[in-house]
Image 1 (cartoon, rainbow, N blue to C red):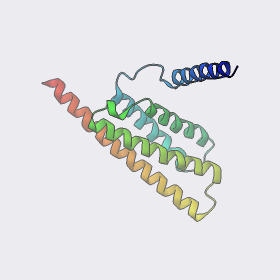
Image 2: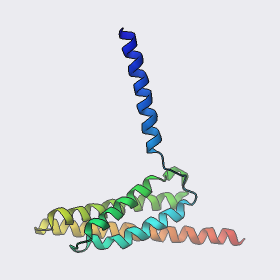
Image 3: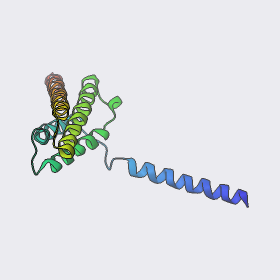
Image 4: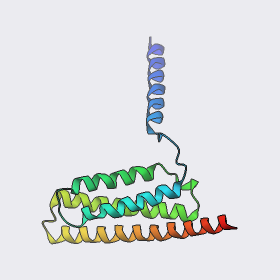
Length: 150
């Protein structure tokens, strides 16, 4: 009887693991990782408005930043070249900081000086990370075009 429970438990565990792995995979492999990184940078930069001032659309901008974070999760930094991996790292950090700034704005309304200062520092750091990632992506795009011209 105990053996039956153990077998049933193992079968259930195998099914749960298989379902978890199937649901956790992206629907399609990323064919151009640098294009995805550039799209994330574009979207995150346009969503930065949500971290600047209270607005009715702040929640939708926060969702756009969450989408950027999910898009970055589709990429494995080990599959990218050195500049792509560094751009991925900077984008992930920048998006995360901007997302926290947007959450802080939405939930607290920046009622105190400390919250306003934290919001400003998160926004500044996140924006700086996006700009650095953008520069790396522009450099790697120029390098790609240079190799293609030879």
